[in-house]
Amino acid sequence: MRLPKRWFNRLLCYAGVFGLVFQFTAALHAWWHQIPLQNFWFLLVAPLLCLASGLFPALQLQKEKPE
Image (cartoon, rainbow, N blue to C red):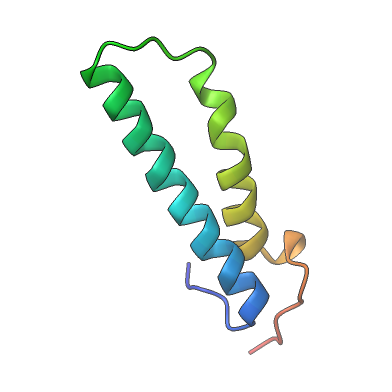
């Protein structure tokens, strides 16, 4: 997989990666300080949807030009 060329699809990819890194960092912090997280997996849905809608052609809002 490569990053898309269209700016909005690329922005969605960057937002999804940032969201995943942030959520895993927050989970690591909570684990380290023994703070229980309820339904941690639901927090990953939004970043994964951003990443998927930027990467997969069927979900892209700006259609990529075929190469």
